[in-house]
Length: 75
Image (tube, rainbow, N blue to C red; front, side, top):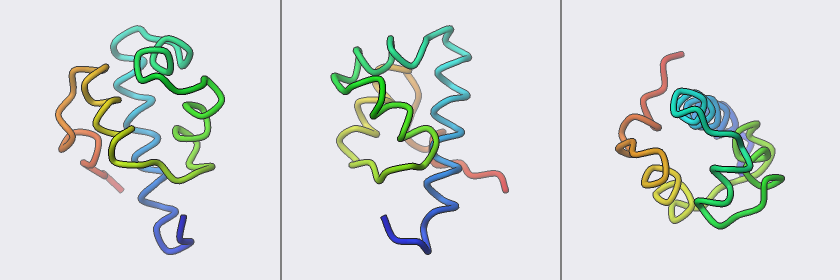
């Protein structure tokens, strides 16, 4: 992940966590739905790693949220 994009990754992670909690899902439940480890899901939510669009789209499907909502960064 490029350092210049860290804030965007943080916002994306916060949005993922927000919609996950709104759906009453744990990180583990979402990770299972997306077919990634809970550790990876945690790292995505905390912007500790880059995330592919494939995983982002899978998260959108699992949360029933359009991608635009996850990328709606309110700074």
